[in-house]
Image (tube, rainbow, N blue to C red):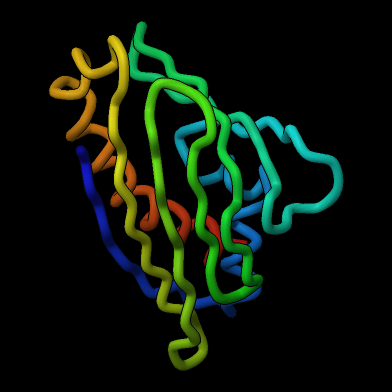
Length: 142
C-alpha cells in the first residue's frame, strides 16, 4: 500500500479552491490525469467519472466516485473499478484570507499492477504531493 498526505495554503477562498478539485477544466491545470464524466449533471456525492493517467508505456484507467461532497469544505473519493484501489480525501479550511488545503490518500495495486508498484509507487506518492503546489499556483494565478 502507498500512503500520502500533504497540505498547502492557497490565497483564495475555500469555495474557489474547491472548484479546482471538481471542475475538469480547472483540474486539468494542475492534475496529471484526465477526467471523463460518467454521471449526468453537476458533481455531487455519488458522482462518477473515469480517470486515466500513465507513466511512459504504463497506463491506468479507473472509475472514481465522490463519496463525500461538501462544497468548500471536503471532498472524499474512491475507486469502484480499475487496477488500483484508491481512497483519498481533500479538506479545506479557511485560513485568514485564504484556504488551508490538505490531502491524504492510499493506493493498493491489484492484479499484475502489483508488479509495477515498486516502479511507479513512489512516483505517484511524490506526484500527489507536488500537485497541491500546482493547484495553488493555478488558483492564485486566476
